[in-house]
Amino acid sequence: QVQVVESGGGLVQPGGSLRLSCAASGITFSIYAMSWYRQAPGKERELVAAIMTAGGTTNYADSVKGRFTIDRDIAKSTGYLQMNSLKPEDTAVYYCNLKRVSLGILRNYWGQGTQVTVSS
Image (cartoon, rainbow, N blue to C red; front, side, top):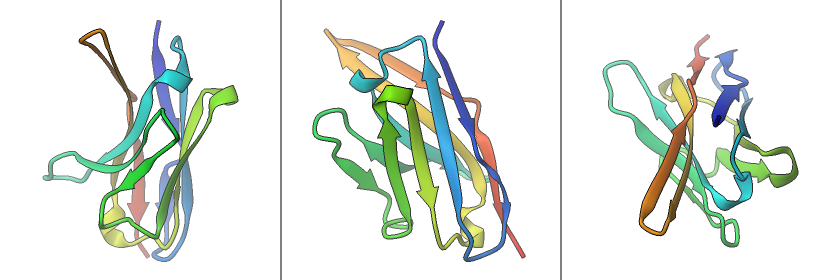
């Protein structure tokens, strides 16, 4: 059974930092692309950052470039999102996504989300 579990969210003041974790089990973590999405109240879910399997290429939303870093530890089957210089507009539920397309079959897994609140 595949499980994707996020952790590390919480309440932080503007300018602060948080590190989110995404622990996966039941899959071969290294062959999945990993992404972090977020969804604020009343808004659609948006892509924040992604890391590909081949070469570890990363991509970021313009709103988080230079502040957030996506990374992963293959040996631990765990991905991370380091968030620095947090702003109130970063407040959202953050979701980890693992995705792989093989032989035309999409395998797509989501975690349950972790709340990040940036407020003074």
